[in-house]
Length: 313
Image (cartoon, rainbow, N blue to C red; front, side, top):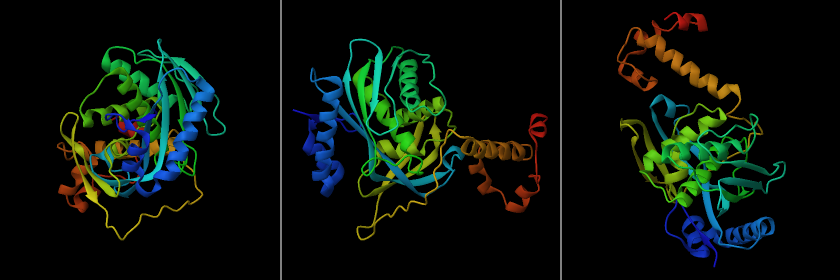
């Protein structure tokens, strides 16, 4: 019997789990999963059970670049996801194969200081998840033989702004945590997934990881990105109107969070807070500006500020 796991919940027969996730799309997804299982067995053999994990991409309805500024966001999961098929090993070796064209097989050993592959290498997302969990658990995650299935039309398109990288990080972290027999609070786990993505160089927030972990079909996720205690965030699912559909249009423009543009936006927001904090010491993130009139804020923000200016503050 083949089984699937969703967010490390109890295992159930594959078709039953797919019905709860994909609804009317179950039949085509069952073909996809069975093809993935056959591919896994072709690469790694038939000796031992296979666990299947998945994490969806997302579209953001409200809140661009507000999560790392402690703001509010309301994303929704989409019907495109990343699958990870794994089988535990008796050592700490992770062997990765990606069915999507252009990705070469990768192997590395788990530790609390995993050497990075070159910038942009696809394995860095799994390296980051494995290293972060190993550091937090105080023991190495088990090794795995893993197969990644993420190519369109059912996978999350890469570079499309639909959070394929976070979905990949989340699915790797969920799989490794489950196989390690380790669990923590949901909010804490989402935060760990966000920390894991810093391994690849992305200085983002927590939105993508939260929606990939906690979204529900036909719902959006309303998330307050300011914790009321360390690691404790408030969120709730919001039903989407039954007679509406979310339409995602391909603009043809691809992006990559590991490039400089995204991190430059994060740095600019932090620089703005540093400038404002000189006059409003209670401010910690851009979320705090809503309590102050714009004319007051504008007077604190110069047209330009160099790195030297910021260093002298």
